[in-house]
Image (tube, rainbow, N blue to C red; front, side, top):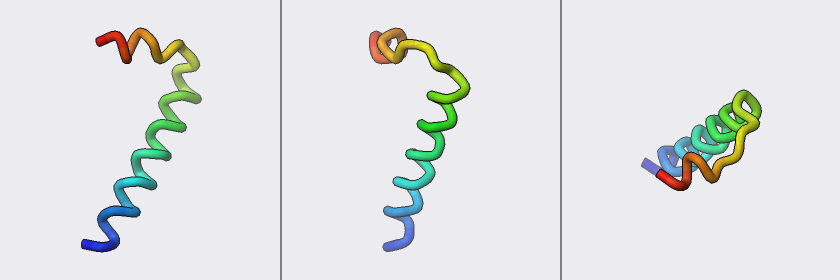
Length: 33
């Protein structure tokens, strides 16, 4: 289970980076939800 914590963190960071690079739009629209 120790490898699960860092794995989730890495996956989340990579996903966020990809989404931000593919959608350079303001995050306020998504945060407003």
